[in-house]
Amino acid sequence: MPEHSSNIAVQFGAGNIGRGFIGALLAKSNYKVTFLDIDEEVVNTLNKQHAYKIEYLDIEKGSREIKNVHGALTGSPAMIDAIHEASIITTAVGANILKFIAPEICNALKARATRSPNLRTLNIIACENLVGNTSLLKDLILKSLAEEQDETIRKKTESYISQHVGFPNCCVDRIVPPYKGDAVLDVGVERFREWIVDETEMKKPYPEIDGMTLTKNLTAYVQRKLFTLNTGHAITAYLGFVKHYDTIDQAIADKDICSTVLAAMKESGAALVKEHSSIFNKEDHEQYINKILSRFKNPHVVDEIDRVGREPKRKLAVNDRLIGPCNMAAKYGLPVDHLLRGVAAAFLYWVHAEMEEDKSEEEVRKLVVETTEWKGDDERVGRVIENYRELEREWKSKQ
Image (cartoon, rainbow, N blue to C red; front, side, top):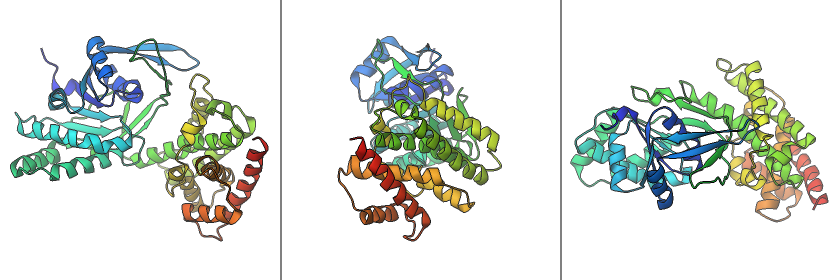
């Protein structure tokens, strides 16, 4: 007897994050999960085994078998059939891949709207590490739909999406490092996981998923993660680069780095608690910071400095993990000494690791002003330059 559509899920992306995080939560919540991927070996193995193992990479060891899973190739008729019956679609493909899967989802929605119409609720959630993740996917789907030449199909699908499809943004957090297990589908993850979804953009009935938390103020949780986990992670990586460490756990084991990272997260935390006082309080946020720090120290999760530090220009964007908390703190007149040291380390990484060149102080100052959009006479610019010079001397002394 076929599964009822309310218990059927489709997960785009059968990589480590898809299998180790979102797909696993869906399967553990008694959903029949179809993973969609372009990797034929992974798809064939899923359809042969219908199960895989998760290993917990933590001080407290353990594993769990994930069952009732299936596979289908992206773009195949099996994909259309799976989406036709599903009540939830999730993605874990990387933000830059959404533009490629949006037309595939659009085609499946056309079929769902016009082929024996399934008018039950469907929620689509892009679980990518990107602010406004699902909004981006929705825009890409609607752009693809606008290219449909058959007016009847286009209008039916537009009406169907408007009435029956939810597109909630979300905030996801779980470290799923590169891992090689005994079998092809084995995946290693940390025990911690957080999946916060915007309730206001969902269609009822809401899916019941153990590990998914609904909120009416997603912005607060997005900023909490971005200005705590991502801030601390980035600063650990950039200060680790200065001292020529290879991995995050090596860097955070350095007492000076750990002290700076903790202080920086407390500075951003003070701003977050002020900004979102109706949701967060100082005591709970300090516990959150301490949990984040313990995750960085986990010796069983090997995360490379270069992986965490890559794309420093993006991470130095005005509203991102380094400049964002500095600006939020400025609203409340709060100190940012340690955050600015992290900012300086990020610029050092950008110049020496990515540009691979030396820059004069004036060139660095110009880069800082253009990137942060702070005025040239802003005291924060001067403090970044001071930290930059000091960190550069240290970096060069260890070469």
